[in-house]
Length: 335
Ligand SMILES: *[C@@H]1O[C@H](CO)[C@@H](O)[C@H](O)[C@H]1NC(C)=O
Ligand SMILES: *[C@@H]1O[C@H](CO)[C@@H](O)[C@H](O)[C@H]1NC(C)=O
Ligand SMILES: *[C@@H]1O[C@H](CO)[C@@H](O)[C@H](O)[C@H]1NC(C)=O
Ligand SMILES: *[C@@H]1O[C@H](CO)[C@@H](O)[C@H](O)[C@H]1NC(C)=O
Ligand SMILES: *[C@@H]1O[C@H](CO)[C@@H](O)[C@H](O)[C@H]1NC(C)=O
Ligand SMILES: *[C@@H]1O[C@H](CO)[C@@H](O)[C@H](O)[C@H]1NC(C)=O
Ligand SMILES: *[C@@H]1O[C@H](CO)[C@@H](O)[C@H](O)[C@H]1NC(C)=O
Ligand SMILES: *[C@@H]1O[C@H](CO)[C@@H](O)[C@H](O)[C@H]1NC(C)=O
Image (cartoon, rainbow, N blue to C red; front, top):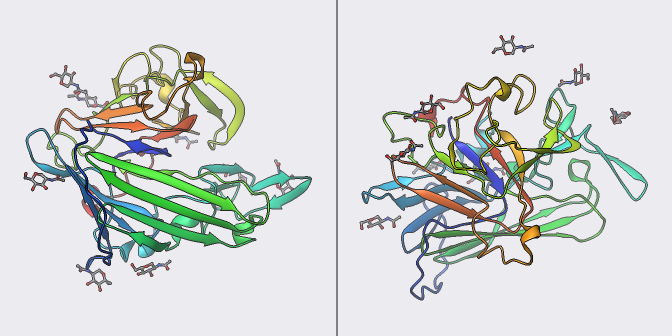
């Protein structure tokens, strides 16, 4: 698998032009592949209860050819069977990314959660039975919107307290909206949710490349990133993305793989790892009050082959970019 992952709470806007009223009506079920189909002008998407995942996102390219620009399996049943589990398009929970030593403290009490990474030295994406290993419940479904819900019991994976969450996806013209709500109903507990969508804006149809390494990436507000140790656990530092350095996607747009010949790329995404798997900070407070919906994208990615651009808007102060390092064992034909 060769793709680009943006992991964040976001609204995604490829050149939106709004015009009409397209109100929901009937409630239907999943199709024969177990997928729930949503559509709006210029965009069609499919979702499944497993991990509240997106499986397909169709958009026409500049030549009018329809492209599926996210990664997903053809049949919903395959998600539970797949052994690699690359968190394909789902919502990791209750805590996305890594928790050091699978241990944390709240109110003087120490909690030990289920480890599942680096020889059980840490917990990734909520543990071996994190949210994106489970089927959510569909609680609302219309022509252009779907809401998934999950109840995560007290003590599940070692986390304290029950959490109830609602994930709502809505399509409007050329736009995919993501809204995530999580309620800790009984105890204080760490919660961090995201959309773990993998993008290939060529839909794997580019004869010159089956990767996203030639996509252009711009992170205009991210002059800094979170410092991490060898296994990508934050080490308490905030690092500058110096102009021209391997993490500089802010001074100008650059190809995702522009830095692969730079010796500094070795170790950039953990021990002996060359590529991107980093948390970039969004710096926009200094400009004064802002509305994240109109302030401009925190990230833009585009492909010359299809002419498709994805602009990502977010109300969050950071987001992770993953260039799919370490996953070349997957055959791209699987997807
Ligand atoms: C998807 O998988 C299920 C379970 O194996 C199967 O019943 C269904 O026919 C499959 N859908 C298609 C379109 O093959
Ligand atoms: C792409 O264009 C075709 C032809 O106009 C149209 O039928 C189709 O719905 C479009 N696809 C999307 C995702 O809008
Ligand atoms: C999730 O639902 C699918 C049906 O789409 C089913 O095949 C699968 O076994 C379920 N997985 C889990 C973990 O419940
Ligand atoms: C890791 O957690 C264990 C308890 O599970 C604790 O005994 C140990 O001291 C912790 N190690 C570090 C390095 O924090
Ligand atoms: C993880 O823990 C084991 C001991 O349980 C240790 O040998 C190993 O070096 C640790 N780190 C990684 C990255 O696996
Ligand atoms: C595509 O990306 C690779 C890896 O970064 C680079 O070597 C190559 O020159 C790029 N190709 C084009 C046409 O830009
Ligand atoms: C680091 O990667 C290089 C190149 O792939 C490899 O030759 C080397 O054995 C690796 N080192 C370790 C300690 O894994
Ligand atoms: C995209 O095409 C433009 C115009 O041909 C060219 O200047 C630019 O370098 C290309 N970008 C990439 C990432 O290939």
